[in-house]
Image 1 (tube, helix red, strand yellow):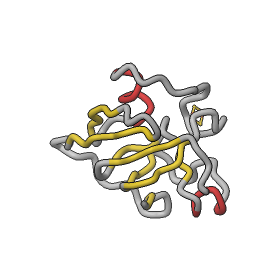
Image 2 (cartoon, protein in one colour):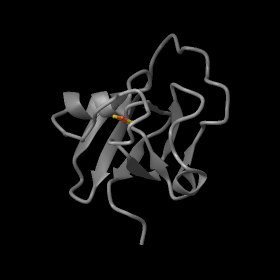
Image 3 (tube, rainbow, N blue to C red):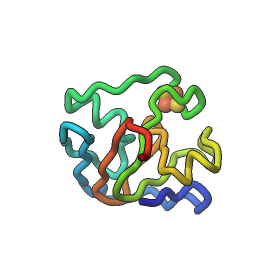
Length: 108
Ligand code: FES
């Protein structure tokens, strides 16, 4: 699992790609476009996630990226280095670069 917060944002894609996102445990899966934040895609698919600010500051939506890769719509998402190392992401500003598996559970 990786996230590309420090990398420059890629140029806007002319043709968005579709990926599969899955939540563990339970396996709720949904399709997400590469130009859509994971939080919005989850809501459209009927997979509710807690949220508040929707701009990467409140941390209400925090999930852990178990598999896959995301990029952010802002350069400095509000996560500590230790949280990033554990795979925590902010789905309200995270866009998929691959299929992803997410969880709200802490690492073991
Ligand atoms: S909803 Fe506030 S950080 Fe995602």
